[in-house]
Image (cartoon, rainbow, N blue to C red; front, side, top):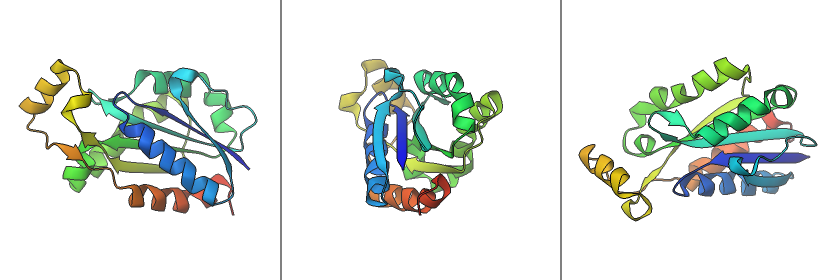
Length: 167
């Protein structure tokens, strides 16, 4: 079984999560390709797809949204899962509904209904942000650190594997 994992990231946070999802699906028996949305990978020939993004200004990355829109037809014909990485998931788990809602406009616009939606904590490491972003994070009093929980990512990927068609 072939699985494509597509993601969007600015700071590398979501890349790490996408890679962990890929590793977990490989361990479950899949052949997996992990690609940035900016590479515009074709979903043709894949049996399942996982798509994820970090959140900027309350939105998924534009390249990821564009990729999903451009490939909606193909994504509707194979099991597809979405995941979102957001700093607030690590600092306030009560924000899960808010973070989950970032996928709603994309689902409504494209008609792609995911078999699963993963919500993962992100990171705030100022050295990877631009000066304006650092200032915004400071004004928001965002906690600094890497809150990604790779065990939670692997657990979600393992739970999602059967929904993607892996036995």
